[in-house]
Each structure stands twice: as structure tokens, then as C-alpha cells.
Length: 187
Ligand SMILES: CC(C)(COP(=O)(O)OP(=O)(O)OC[C@H]1O[C@@H](n2cnc3c(N)ncnc32)[C@H](O)[C@@H]1OP(=O)(O)O)[C@@H](O)C(=O)NCCC(=O)NCCS
Image (cartoon, rainbow, N blue to C red; front, side):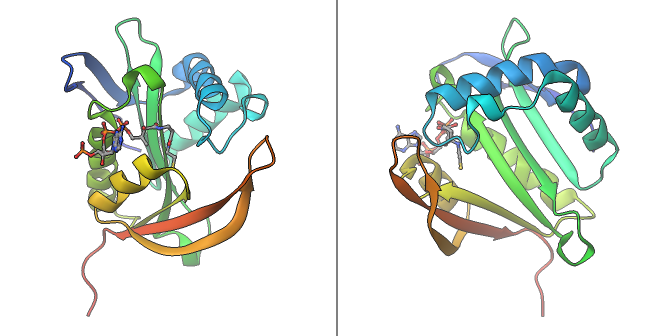
């Protein structure tokens, strides 16, 4: 993974640093993931399922060596992570050209352009990648904001896994599978 660092100014004037997530960010990444899991019904991970700091360090160390991995975090002025966006290519030869993408942003930072900015970066990195030709993601059927973002970026719906998600209150959601081809056009 190529490491990067730059910044973004959001529509409300706030600025954030966007940088690759490295092993030294494991603690703030964990705190961010747990906060997102507690607050957003659209997080696929529950707070008690977030990996411990050592496991996260190991993951980010491996990602650093992996040409099929890409990920950035958005850091506030205190160097606390408030959002992330990443993709990982599927680790089997016949599927390696497909990367699965995830994105999350803490509530106070939503709705001011950060999601689109992170997705633009993820797509640009995939287009530059020598490994990845397609991005896939799963989105909870009721998550209309995320779905409209993906749709506006050219992702198309490839299917729907009926009642694949069961929320803690017992409600079921479908998992909508969306994909975007980022490789060269095929004959
Ligand atoms: C989904 C998510 C990543 C979008 O990021 P965001 O920073 O809030 O979105 P942006 O401000 O960049 O807006 C992008 C698009 O989303 C849609 N959108 C954003 N806020 C919206 C709102 N309140 N109502 C309707 N649509 C909205 C619009 O289509 C918008 O397009 P625009 O850029 O032309 O305005 C973010 O809201 C989030 O993390 N939500 C919780 C976790 C989650 O859903 N993760 C995705 C799991 S698949």
C-alpha cells in the first residue's frame, strides 16, 4: 500500500488530515470503530466485535506490505480518527482483481462532503492499482444516504442478499451488493 497524507476542507469550513492508517493509529482507530458501531445502525460491526489494539496493529502492518490493500483515515486537530475508507482485494487468485470497500464517518462530520471526498480517493487509488479492477461493497437496504452516494459515483446494484442482516432489535435488512468496474474497458 502506498502511504499518503493530505488534507481536505469540508463544506462547513472545517479541515481534516487524510492519511494512510498505520499501526501507530491502532488505538484511535479502535476508539473510532467502537463509537461508529455504537451510534450508527449501518455499521456492520458491533462495538464488542471490534478487534483489540494488537490485532489491529498486525492488520495495518500487513496492509502496509499488501499491494491489494488501500485505506485512509480522516484525523481531526487532535490526531483522533473520525472517519475511514478502505478497500482490500479478495485474497484468492481468481478473485484478486475485486476489492471490497468499507467507509464510515462519525455523526458530527457527516453531510458536509467528507464521504464523497473519501470515495473519490478510494476510486482513484483503485484505478491506479495494478491489482484491482473492480470495487464491490455491501450496503444495508435502508441506508438511503450511502446508497445515493454510491449511485452518484457510478456503482450499480448487482444483487440483494435478502434478510442477510439482523439488527439487534430483531429487524431484518437486505444487504444490497453494488459494484464499480475501475479496470480497462473490456472488448
Ligand atoms: C454514508 C456516509 C459515508 C456518507 O458520507 P457523508 O460525508 O455523510 O456524505 P457527503 O456529505 O459526502 O454526501 C454525499 C452524498 O450523500 C448523500 N447525502 C449526504 N447526506 C445526506 C442527507 N442528509 N440526506 C440525503 N442524502 C444525503 C447525497 O447524495 C450527497 O451527495 P452530494 O455530494 O451531491 O451532496 C456517512 O453518512 C456515514 O458514514 N454514515 C454512517 C455509516 C455508513 O452508513 N457507512 C456506509 C456503510 S455501506
